[in-house]
Image (cartoon, rainbow, N blue to C red; front, side):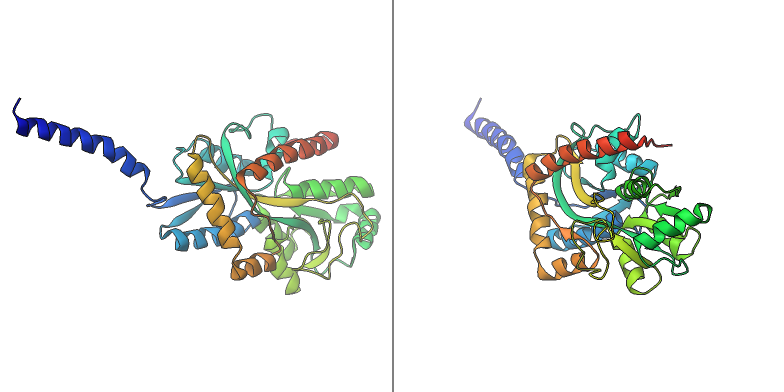
Length: 324
């Protein structure tokens, strides 16, 4: 073998050895990223996902495309995300249904511990009890009295069976010993619309999709389920202040990626979201929607997921709630 051929072989081998390293060091994402939202447009998860997707697109200089895949209480979208390639180009933004559904459903298309890597809990929002302005009740105590007087006249819209607003409505019903029919919709957006249109006179939903309508007078806010009042609706009492203790609940807005996604990508997504949420403009925008920014680390969010699965599992079993 002459020297020229030997040099050529060595050059080719050297390039082969270097190329993977160069590819591995290529900046992420470098192409479009799909952000799966397992609910209909207009709900709280969709609202927060679109805000984050827009800012990530600007930061990454690559498009983050929101893909709404509603159905089965979020299971369809979460199942789709669980079975997507673990390459960082599929992100799921989920609500508390992620931690509720493992108990609520006999079978789900994902394992909450094995199918995903928790990235961050973006933000959380308390739930809010609302009424159509034609309902004569101005407080939760008045509402309870009204329902007791004529239970057949009232029903309450929620974002779906087993969502935290749905569980909050059930807990209120159990605590006040009310004969109140829950009407689960396929997301907070449709539930809010049903109360605005007075198809269902009452509602319990996460705050973000309802806040603007409460401020505009198209819905009457009665109480929030947070441990403290919300800065977005400071005039609304907490459920404890309204006379119903032990009703605290919120709706998380978490980011997940399929199991097996490289840790460096997981950490980058978490860090970039946290950095964006720290911007004054973003903090104000998120707060005005009724969210409290969390921006937890992957490790912190993993701990929260485990705790929430156990917490809501106990509530669901005690109430005997099952998905239809």
